[in-house]
Image 1 (cartoon, rainbow, N blue to C red):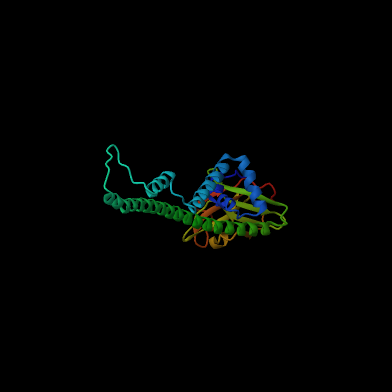
Image 2 (image 1 turned 90 degrees about the vertical axis):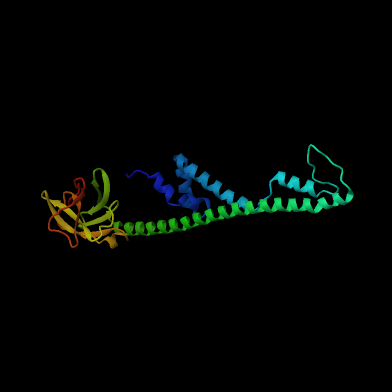
Length: 265
């Protein structure tokens, strides 16, 4: 059984879709079940919920209490700004001139606060837009993966005798071969190999201890799911090599090999 990759799951965008309530009931239950098993998933849910909460709070921006208090004090009837420690009694004409000045100061203070609030809101909105774009991108990746998985399931449907063999390179899985001895088919799935760019991967089976070519791999076809090869002989194991375009009569650049086949047929 392959080990559950928590980081890959966190990067998939499923948590964001869960918080945005974009999952069906079964998918939500799966996320909640994993959250009870893995603290990292619980923490990621909490962080995404906090980020979303910050954005919603910005929709109802309210000036800080001290600014509102200052504004109310400055605009109350019969009140003027007090400067300590010197208090000077001014003629009524001079006192009346302070009102426009006080109003101007209050207006500037309020305008400054609103500007800073707007700047902060714009930054938050820009961040949210980026998050939304990432979510859409992740949604496309998830959709593509689901299509590949469905194709794989259709290919293996009814293959009750299919044996999975993992092709490894220094203990790193690079491919999986599903060998169906009844149908004499080898279903190939590459997992950790890059685009060969001008070359082709070639699938091999060991028969009598010698490598026998099963066929070259179409890279574009692999991006859509499993690629199936018909093989009449009884394979003892499988291997993957990188060869010039069109393949080679014998492997030259072997990338990895599988364990022994149990059900050769």
